Image (cartoon, rainbow, N blue to C red; front, side, top):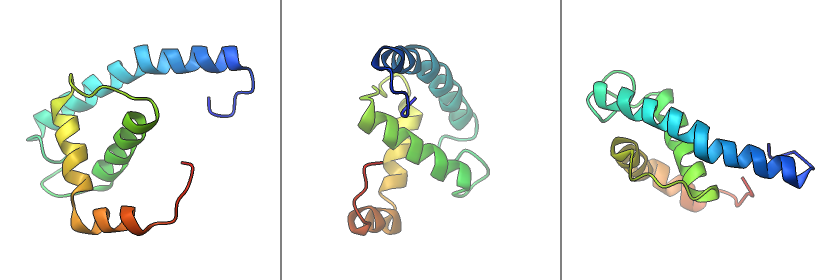
Length: 99
């Protein structure tokens, strides 16, 4: 999608992402997180699943203005992850990128 040169095609892909794909997967991930206790996706401690999902959520909320009000567990998960001192420090100190 991000490498699509045709603006019409790009707009259609983005529309589908926001209106179809995001709600489908965010609903599923919210349900999985709640079923596992609401704090971690797998087990009782931070895993790569938590890292990947928190980063993806930050990206779609930042770049696509995704409203997380229907996914409160995911919203809280993303906020909790980004408040981990080491993560918070890295985000403030890392090199600036467009991604």
